[in-house]
Length: 640
Image (tube, rainbow, N blue to C red; front, top):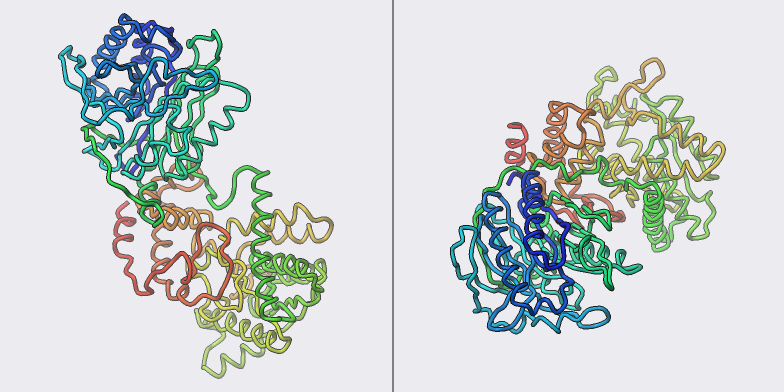
């Protein structure tokens, strides 16, 4: 099992009520099909060997023996599959009938898991035929024939976590249909006992509105338990005497729906589950409490998962759906503005001072400040935007800054810092022909000096413009643009900055919309080196790499603790056709090297609002020593 990925499947076979031999043949065919695709856990519906709608036929010896014969057939025919298969059947234990899941592997029945909560309301009358698994004392066993036709003693268990000895993260627990719908589902204890996957064998009939509720129930249970939840539902072939079954198969992981079947059909849905990600989530969340549970181990060869049934968003910080993206952008801008408005009110600041370069980050900071002032009912003239042209400033960016200030109705002041920087360079003996880091940073620190003193002069605060991506890479001048009195973009990555500005452009008109669009088209640059033929010569992404790659690396490293090898693997899949393998590796190594070496800048960041799941504030989500060694990460990345 490479990088913690395992493929699982939920299958709804075509069946015939009470025709156990036919049902077994359909189950076998689907199990083989799923195994060929690489599924290691294959779940079939509740009572699928007989059909859920057998009624009083469940009390017939003929049907019970037919179910056991069918189980033997399924064991025999799936013995060569490198997968665990779960099927449902009625099983007699100590003279009582139980609705059970049989856990099969390598031709053996590992165990039977009985249903614990039997619905006996509305259209359900399971207590007419079955007894709850809660009545068992955990010591029961039954004699059945395995795939070799040999009689074997198989335990009947509840509360057991099944663990693969060959891949310890591959653990699962089993519950059956109604077990999920009760106030305290068995899956809660199973997950706390170490199950990363919950398998539900179900026969849930369809009525108006139920599919939406079922989908939300599965998705939310997976999120609550930090697990993968696979739900295999009965479908075509069940009796329609009074009910209709839709075969609504679902697979969710940690609150996200990964796969869903087309209803009123039969077939298989697949998902590639990230067990390492689930393990990371549980270990970081101290509110997820582990409890002792019984463990049932099995052996199963684990090949690498091909990831054909999982995709990774190219811009993980940005919703893919436009309607959701617009809603999210409005929410983010409101969060940023609320943070700034609260700080302005608390400090009784009369002005908000922003270094407005005409680039993306300072444009977003201005948008946020406008929202904050409107929220407080303040005159926008209290927003002091400052352009500070120097050696690298172009007419395009300066012009856009002036147009933005005018369109938003804020105050604009121009402070040409060339003379001040020239004097400073003379004072320290820095040649203007030496375009080194001192040449660049001298300008950045001079700009911060101007902003801080203007804030003091006007009784205001400096609003920071730097974003999360720059903080991750250390692409900021220490005590220059790195510093402010409140950093509104501190948890906004560059890819999201672009979408927020684009959202503002979409909902505005005239010159404001036009200038915002031109800002979006302007290359990202600190403009600290002289222009070439009047155009920006210093393009950030030429120097540190594409921000869409760095934001991708940042998200999966910090949010889920992915190792460089795993990040590289999913980046190759996600950016295939856009970047070749050598380019991805090059910028991944760059990201890791800069991320570790630049932590000292993040250890003393100004305040700023958290708006997403990832921030680098030393007071919040990220605490890392400034002198931590990157050797392990770089060694793995450079060996790719």
